Length: 211
View (cartoon, rainbow, N blue to C red):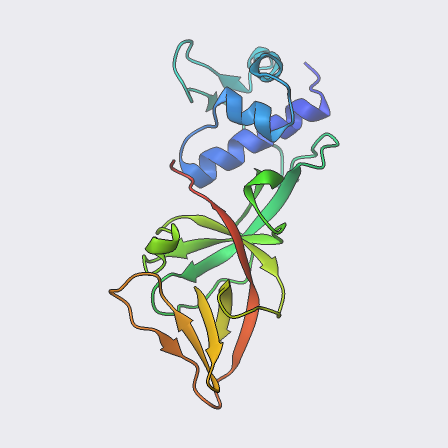
């Protein structure tokens, strides 16, 4: 059976979600990701994939999609025209604690609704640690990063210090730069003279994969 571009894109989307989150997306999530007006359109395409022998479903059970065949090759999903959908690479991990090294290569690409973020992100980073918990950022969250070297005091930033990366609240004043946690169990990081310091981007929202 020949699949449409939308059905191939849904197949890839399901595979990426299972690999990244450990479970399949719901029909409502598929509908939202592809800009469908309701779940019936998602059901139609899932039925086509089921008839093609690519997946199986358990009626009456949420998130019960099971892939019987993985997408061919590394090609990313080709989405229907929809300006509300972002394809965001996950570039590694960022510390919400003490700084840790960040991976350079992309681990995966996920499809996200633009409405989750302000401003529009360029990529996602996976959070490790709980130093930003009072900002609502928890271990395992995927945070959107808007790539820029400009930031104001009081903004949550992704900062690089001597080749290590962290997410913190930026404070600039009295001739010093501090990166503040949002958890009283952690101490602020003060950028020392001579350290290699740069703003990598602005925090612009998050996705909680297991929510």
